[in-house]
Length: 338
Length: 294
Image (tube, rainbow over all chains, first blue to last red; front, side, top):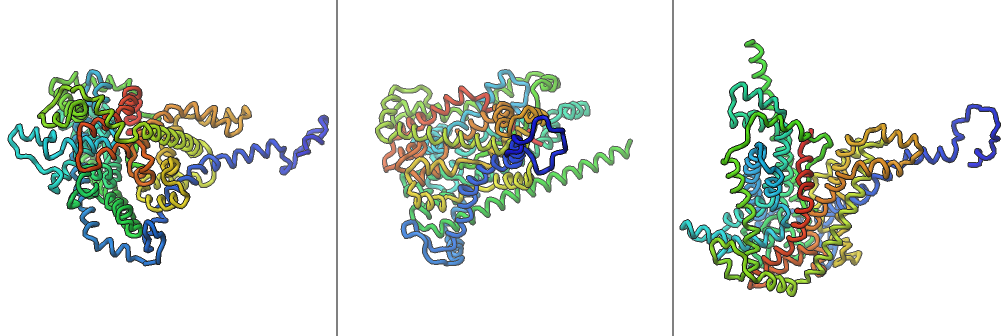
């Protein structure tokens, strides 16, 4: 540190030894080396503490007899997992979750695709239409659940009123299993269709225009162009939307919790006919106060979500490679003809 | 903590200008397209309007087939909501919770995103991969140990307990990284260093100004996510409710007055509706910009 002070100003310039950096230089070097780690540290520390640690610790809890009030009990090995896997309510909740997931994902993405294709036209007042489509997204899931709990009410709910007009008998939206799944899927679809349509719209707009033009010159109509130019072009985005919808769709909570609170305190219907897995996890932990089994449910659900996500991913990769193989073959035969 | 995710941004999103030419192929669409779109928009906004109509009427309004005209009871029903649940406390709580979370996610996301995008350090790529991998993890499933920890700390019922688990998101880091990697030229950082700026000054005076648009979008979506979150606040602080928790408490009990419940739903939706009117374009831009990724 003192070296800068001692060195006379008029000293002949000589090569400074490597170690004798000035304080300033050393500081600067330290700054360059350490800063990146300092910048990423808050994220990793906080994420480790609040994201990763709880997930790992869930495994610890699931291996113990652990009650809400008494706290940690004996180590029980996989007994909690065994209990959960033999629990018909657990399988019921998995079945409900998957059923609601399919009912919400498939129509949602199909409609989003259509809306995106419509928005991709040369519309007047683009921003107006885009905002209109997105409107339901700003309503919170809790508010959505309250609104649709009323819309689907058996006595004088909006849907049954409208069905009455066309002469259909009222449907037991909150009692019947399939009907309740449709109702809950409707809530999810209502909130997310416009959002996903906008994502797909952006992807459609990035498909190169000359591909469309070439197809048009070859005589392909609008529908044909949509199927063989647009759809392949937006596939990566479509997969992204699908995976996001999977992660979200398998964790539905607010909608079934609030769909029919008057019966059974909001655990998913009088007969658990629309109890999803996260709802069951919540019931197990905070109603039955069995943290051990609840943690086991959490881990099984975690595996299910990761598993389905992987299947989605692999399936879409399969389709992608199959498609490009077909295209390559087609190109080759075209080339041979020429 | 909710499962919704934003798509990934790239600074090189398709520019609007060449699109005009692109559309030269198809002319202005016909009535069919507008008709379809109008039907969809009317259908999807009607439940909201219907909520307002019922909320401004009485429970009997619901019996009407397709009520269109609001009644006069909205204020009365809204006052009933304010009596039934601690509404203003809940709004205040939600504002605090969502603001702190937004500030934190954006700050730490930008810091880490900048480091990953523009600084060179050992282990960078591996760490970035770990960030991406954690994005797909449903952290919501860690609620049981989180609850145990919060109780041991004596934090249950405190806003801090709601906030802390949501202070950072892997998505925030990824989002900022994707944006900054293209938007800041390396020469600019080099120049700042030549001028004698240390790392933090470079960050504050070069990276942050460039990152501002992405920070705004990340902030907008983080705020919405925090504002609408339900499961964790319900578990850890039901007696000190956020707006969503208070709203859900409207529907307890055996008799449900739907005009009051829906008045609550409408009231609770107003803040985000205002946000939507003010920042709707940015919201759309954020969703759409993010979708175009390689």
